[in-house]
Length: 211
Ligand SMILES: [Zn+2]
Image (cartoon, rainbow, N blue to C red; front, side, top):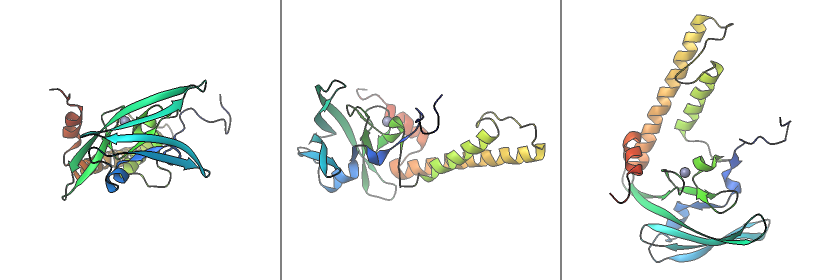
């Protein structure tokens, strides 16, 4: 068992500490136009720590760079990151990366610890250090905490022995309200960002390419 400060294995890292690729930065700089290529540099403590070459094709950005394995041997890496332009609800478009590891479309990808792979923050279990979480996630977490206090989750709760039934029922109803609200907020967020509801989106993003 780890003691205080020994570092829990499930502890989330902070996305700002990782190498990140923000699709909005690519868009602002015109790097999403097919044929564009360049090299991105990251620095820390005044020193250059990493560089990644990118080439933009029609619907993907190819990343190429060299990293080192555990023995210090150079490992060449090449990763294709699909890009998609999706309409916003109130006009205009937004660009998204396709996370190389899951079905999500996201604006920020981060390098994993080995720097050999890139993924969305859900895949890498990262959180944003300074930026507040999306409302849906905050409400979901609140519901989750409430259910946890009731010794269960959205499907299952157990009344603590010391708690009165009236209190218990009220707390369960509250937690369920938060859970329902989180679902609604998430649906609104999906509509704003992708112009479709979460269920449609899930079906849409996992549709096989070649069909
Ligand atoms: Zn992902």
